[in-house]
Length: 342
Picture 1: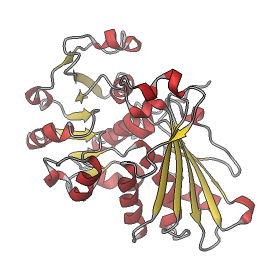
Picture 2: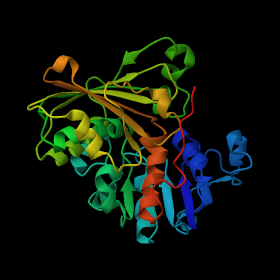
Picture 3: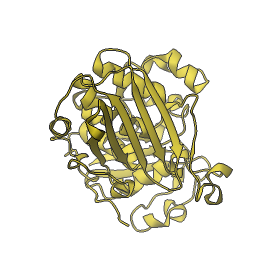
Picture 4: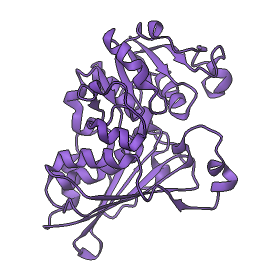
């Protein structure tokens, strides 16, 4: 049994961590922090956790957090960097769901996040927490940076093609859509139901913060810099990401067999039968990425359809998957959950 702390328990990723960890047989939830809700019972804010989580929110205290075996940061960017160095010094393992440690180039990070990084010396120590490529590095890691939601769906879709050298890395397109929960739990007019229902729009066309993360990972796995056009969209749904990915084939291959072989031993990647069209509802609440690969009209264009729940495989579920790997548990423990339909 390991002791777990969560910093930032009132957002969507925080409550997803609580929902999944509450039933994890090897976890003791010891502390959950929130500056704004300190003293409030968790079940008062999130009644779905009544009878499952008997904790109150508290102020983040490094002394208390350091007593945990692992601390999750479910916080906006720049929050983790203020506390992580102290926890690392004390030997506590950290899993950060924010973007604070996802990149390896501090100048690129500061350019995209418009602020100075206060502990960039930890960049090299941080392990990028995509188990499908970094499982062995995750096992001994003290600091894991959980991938973003768009990067998870996009990278898993492109990786088999780039690793096999089947597509031109200079002509990649990711056309991705997300639900409104991707913007976080906050009062913002553009995220109101009256504003999003029945509507659909692109955003971040000039550049999205997940773009350098995707480029860095894909480039590392094909041995050269990729040129990626990434356009995110806001869809009128609560959860889910659907990424439609386009590449230009430079040679012919059995694409279905390639994807099935690449992910045959991955518990949370489901390569669907040829001709399938994965739906976001098929992954709602589950820690799984469903993928289908197509070659329309036998042309030189390959189309990959990749769907995830942005709050689970795109955030909290993947964070727990990392925790399981780090502590030697069965990788699926506590997160082998069937998606909810309808």
